[in-house]
Length: 179
Image 1 (cartoon, one colour):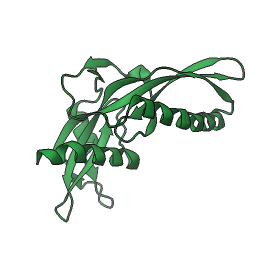
Image 2 (cartoon, rainbow, N blue to C red; image 1 turned 90 degrees about the horizontal axis):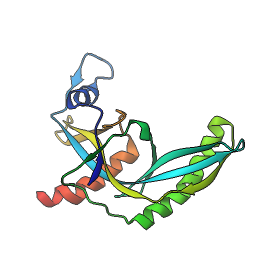
Image 3 (cartoon, one colour; image 1 turned 45 degrees about the vertical axis):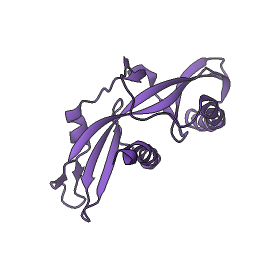
Image 4 (tube, rainbow, N blue to C red; image 1 turned 135 degrees about the horizontal axis):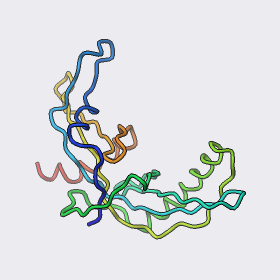
């Protein structure tokens, strides 16, 4: 199975996922455990053209669990083979392509506003299923309940609300069955 190699090591992930106190910055909450998780995504090539007839290509990703849209930088992604996937796709390629066609229009509008040039969609390439790596750190809060924080293992960015929802759905599907 196709996947992407993490650029962030486990030690770097543990350091990045270590929480600092809000008032006293020296207070650290170190994750009890950090693990590498691969989630399924459908990747699509998007070709656009601006008014000067210059063509550009972007790589869009639709997660195969909830169907959320995101843009990724293909320059930093290195392919590798994954032996066995823990998480399996829940949505079909056709559904992901329908989400992409709707969301890519909004992406082009926002990109046009940022760069002050108008983009026109030339085409969307065929989709490809691949597994994308994330580092997940587990913590215990003051009440004793387990919490988690996730980080993109390729770019190193901490993931927020939409990705948290994705992880909750992915963990609920596979990890609850094993208990």
